[in-house]
Amino acid sequence: MKLLPLALMGAMLATPAAALEPLSKEKYVNDRLIAARIADRIRRTCPSIDGRILYAYGEARKLKRYAERKGYSRAQIDAFLDSKDDKKRIYAVAEDYLVRNGATADDPESFCRIGRQEIQKNTVIGSLLVAK
Image (cartoon, rainbow, N blue to C red):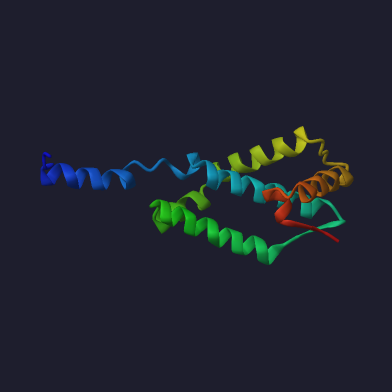
């Protein structure tokens, strides 16, 4: 068995952190943030559905720990969360989802219908909501 030179071993060990994709491309993180935005829009628009705020806060903390365990620094996480471009992108994807599923701005019941479906299906979105 050949031994790797020390410099090559060091480079290999450093590769995972250096090879991290930008948080804006990390699917799990983005999917959860989009789900949270959708749930927020539903709870704000539908009078018969509330948000599970404490649960959502706990999920946000778990998501931050997930990113940290993947190797993202707190500075990278904060920069991503503070990014106006990323926020616009996440909001746009959430709005597209709502529209594709029948939500219309002048019909709160359309948001309620989506919310009830998400709760019934026990999706990530539904887990952040509760019917009144």
